[in-house]
Length: 239
Image (cartoon, rainbow, N blue to C red; front, top):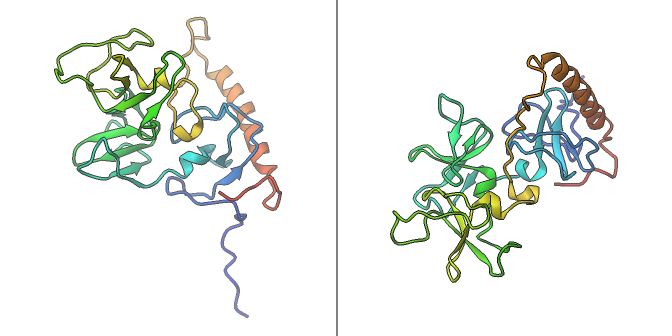
């Protein structure tokens, strides 16, 4: 008698992602908030839905999971950008052309031009309102001045800005801001960037024992959370 191919045990809301070999389970109401998305490297501190693999401790925000594989972006009109899980360089890191900071997570990349940007920078809105200024700020892909040698400060943090970095700018008031200063509390859907916390000087100089204990406790909590989601439970919603 012929046997039917049973395939995987994935539920209707569980999905495969190009970046991971296992099926990822959708968690709609996370109870664990100390998760870090492998795509944007931001903690899931907003209790937004995410996809998780408890076998590998691999997590993606729902919006990061749904990021397009290819992107036509106005900052680089000559070529489409490709979403990469791992930077294509031997260093396994890249410098974001938008904000100037280093990245180790997913990136949109043009290999021919060595142009790479964070997911969160790629999804920056074209205009934004901030509390520090009464007018709408427009996204600029570099210095807003004709004279590219002019130096200028961010009007929100007063730090000198890199002339090649993107910024939000009000031309009428000559008011400019870093991306990360303008978007201080973005939704996960904007793919915001936050660096991993740096241990303070008072921390254990050999923290492996404490960190492993903390990690194991955290990992067990995450596994229980993922396993507790029934494939047929109404907490799961279609992506």
